[in-house]
Length: 490
Image (cartoon, rainbow, N blue to C red; front, side, top):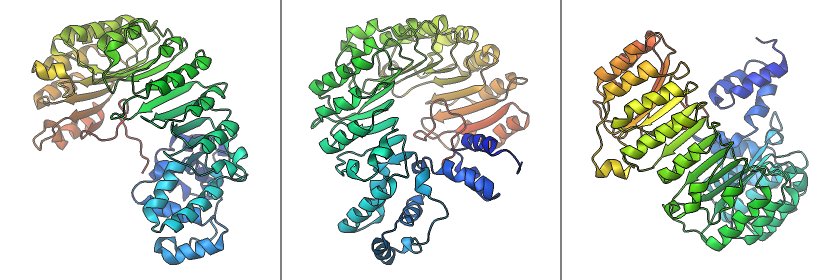
């Protein structure tokens, strides 16, 4: 193992990049492993800044500084910076490919007290990251950011290969002009749209790149739309209509520009203000190459039309916060199994009356690998108004055990009222002989007598090879919808 080729080791460690604990232990193996791993860990160090790591991170960055007057002053003022004048073993900053100015500001404000010191160390950190020795691919800019990073020596070199940019639409004019001048290769753009004081010149940031294929428009839930600004913003995308493949919006589109994205592969719609019902043009949407559909608070009719017009390429469907009755629940399940032969991942509500429709879906979608079933969803107004809180767990589990395709072994269940232990036992007993299950449950109200709190019960099925892993997730825990083994980034 110690004599593995360096390129092979790099590929192995890249696969483990979210498992910081394992990577840190590998660093101690020998010099070769350490030299391969350090650049991987520092490619995007910001994702590891949890559990008190901020001070340690700040200490490492300060150790790169050649400004002795500043470092001497800081080490006298802050105990956690003692010995930060020692030269680091590696030029860690040079390995960074993600520059997160949001995190830099937060770290400094959280750990440095005086305003003058905050300004001085902020200036020093920006200079340490932005120079001729670094080149970034991802850039994150905080709200109301006005520091003239474009004037720092080496900025042009640093930002010449930025492929991902995240910023707010009220960005400072001078900062925006600098970004437009230097960042000509942006492929992914994430814009946080404000309710006022938006900078209309941000359009240049959209029009300049030649291969802009991913767009995210994020609006906070309590913000109302600045419609004149959004209209100009959306129309600026027309230039990239044939190139855009990923589009995300958390608010109703003001224009019909969305209809021009003929090569769209990923669509995420979230109607924060429940205004999509008024957009009849959405019912004529057609994306023949669509592969991923994520819909929240979107009218069920629109979702069904999107599925029916997808020409069979959809492999991931995620539907949540969508209130609909039993008939529409049946229609959407039918739309899926009639049009999505290659579906791999699915999240949706299942009404008790449509369990047999689910069985048809399982039979028709033979590539299904992960299934997330919402039962008794508290966010479903239909569910609440009609007191539709009863699910025949025995019938549901019987169908899953009998009709699930061979590829399907990843299950999630979200519910108000948990199934009885006998129902789960029946499901797992009938699963014997198949691929071990990855099982996750999210009870809305988890009481001490919740059936799957019985650790011995689940351990028995693990020992028998029926269950590979089980997670009982508290509501609000950070698992991705189609994530069964949590990424270890701490």
